[in-house]
Length: 455
Image 1: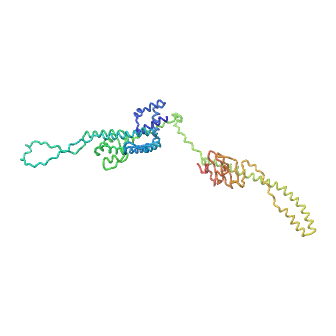
Image 2: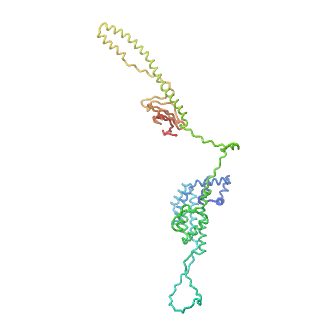
Image 3: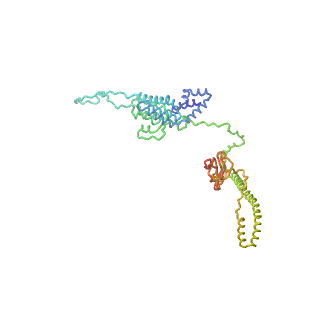
């Protein structure tokens, strides 16, 4: 199929997009497509598809530059560097290098030679014998003669201005028709200038013949002609066949859109109105499901607060339970010290005061803080350490191996010992299907793996 498409493209390029049905039959491509199991309708559809892939504007510009290079001396020849440049540019437009070197450039050279030979075949004006110089004769007096008695005298032939004879005009008309018929619906101003430059004919006569051809073949100017003379007006614009404005399917007919039968709804009964197709399902987004996402967010906040508060409450209860036996032991230890103070008071008030100060010091000793009981929170994996950049990290992992982590009161995503998403959000979830939900300043939205908001 690829080879058939390339050959179709080459034929379209060679004929400048004006490939008729008879031209396709001459190439034999329809028969070759039929042998490959492609019907005539599918072949036309394939031709339309290939035509839409061709940039005719760039192709026409490349063809004009090629013709200019071939028309410059040395005539019909290109340097190797020029050929390589043109081939490279054609390859960028989807044409093969072998096709450009072996078929397209030789075809352009042949067309230029045909135009040049056609212009040289135009019948030149007939040669007129040079007038014989008249020798001066002495004037002689003749008797007056009546006009009625005078015999007719043969007047000498005088060379008149060389006007186009009927046979010359017919030859010019024939050559103009032969040359302009090759363009098939689109005659550019550049091609007309080449015609005027190549044909050694009176410019006014040639302009009239070109205008007569355009009128007889239903051509119209693409833009408003400008100029003072007829030739200037003809060369100031491109000329197209009237069918171009009628939107004929050629050279690039509109694609035939056939409904896919698999998706055609069943024919409704006659008594019922035709069912209208349901509107396209609206893509679900975060804002369209605000209620659902709000509920999910509220539940997640409650769960997070519960998991954070429960370990702290257990730590406080554990601390108080461990403090109670310590206090009882202190009370037991203080009782004998009080008895000693009472005995010391009886002996000496000074000693009593000193002993009381000494015995008060054990009561003022600071309590050692009880070690916090290990929390039973399953989602907490690590707590902050001096060498880490976060205060808390959870065990939940996302698509990219990231985990929610907290720094202060803000949450972010931690991955590979570094912040994947910096902790700037009030709450955050891990990535699911490339999206993570965040809460910031009371606003809930989705972000991508770069931290950019997404719809």
